[in-house]
Length: 468
Image (cartoon, one colour):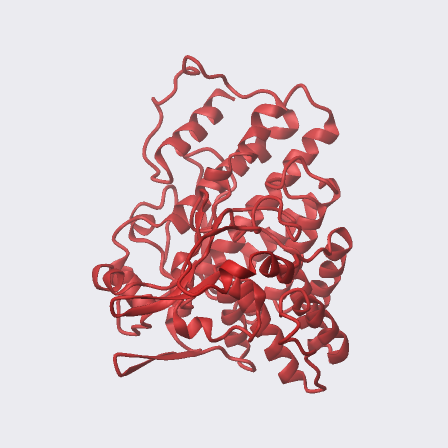
């Protein structure tokens, strides 16, 4: 037990550097204790600033879901490469520093491994209580691996998943444990098995919103199966998740409550974000790029134009702003944002896509319009009505991308659709008279590992999944 505690303390102190920690703790330090009770281990699940951070900044930059200032583009070559879709840039060479996306994810995985290894043998708890904490850690570990594989590896394609590499699979909290860069299929099998083992023990109501409940487990399963193009299973678990929580936030009411300030030109008063810990759409909460209370990202003009007219959620979050030679949409919310957890709106839209894929177009649009009625102002609202499958799916994707901007999901969905080839995603914009494009076939849809991870991979090896 002491050795395990030594490993996790060292890991949390140094980050995922794989530096030697053999002499870091020969005994429990003064003022600290070796964890023995379930409460000792459950406390790690409450460490939101360390273990619940889902940073996908590179993906948001590539999707142009966040605005990059001219100063940033001039000073940061990696952001410039992603944001301006520079197909010739060597992003591997530009990742000279460590990356939060990678290290924060594995930092959380190490903690969840520690809990999974020890929760069932702890003291001062019933077997049921131990199983709950063990199951919650399993789901969170699976979530971290899903984020990693959909950032640093190619998207899941059944015909190639067994041969293409994903990310290192680490299942022990021991800092000297061996790791293997497994195939995409192996990692998805691992993710699915983790959730399968956890589901029987997840509570319907969890201790806090940081702890995944049964609804979160079902919702995450729906996300995973959708990414695997398994629409039957994705629909099954979407329905199970919505049976646990089907609430949608009334963004029209939020807009009306703040209408005067929202509609006042040049007034950039910030409002408290409703998308925090108590957001009615939450299954579970995880931070995004920032692990503290903050403002969200501003967005480019081109990105703002992809929202529907009268979208109260958009109007409540961003307002056009000009400073010097730059015009963009400045953020107007501050506080907490659930950009890393599971929410009901994602599950509604997963269900809508699965129904449309099964040619149940009318049912799919009923689900889509259920979401839109809580978002689009009455003066602009009209039901989307069509019998055409492609039109319906494109409407679902548009709403989903707008709803989940600054999360991993628009990036993951684009990769999935590009691999399928039927509804490919590409982008084009004009800056300073030059047209820039991001084709659906671009290598840029897979992010390279940071140099530090490849050069110092711990007890294993890491092979880049992209050429540049």
